[in-house]
Image (tube, rainbow, N blue to C red; front, side):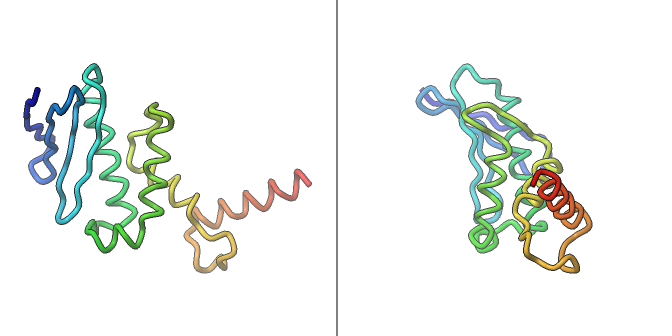
Length: 137
């Protein structure tokens, strides 16, 4: 069984929806990258679309709008962290791109980097980590 529908939340980044082997597949092509989200036939397409949009937007934020194959390969660790923040064991945890990108940025920072090279949020997270580590020793 194969079905094809176009969902256009905004004209610039339209997501496609199709049915493939009793699975719902949502996908989006941007430049030379392909973003996919799949779910069972009983899943809600709008929820899957929110996951796809949240994933794409968080990757776009982390790559500073330069979403292409070279940037994605250079920052693949950040993309995997995005997926980890969005879904865990099939459960959707978060779809807000700003929250996802914020968590990934905090988790991916180098704690040994000098404070002058960190953003304010990263510096505060480093200070909080050092404080909790000293309090629990």
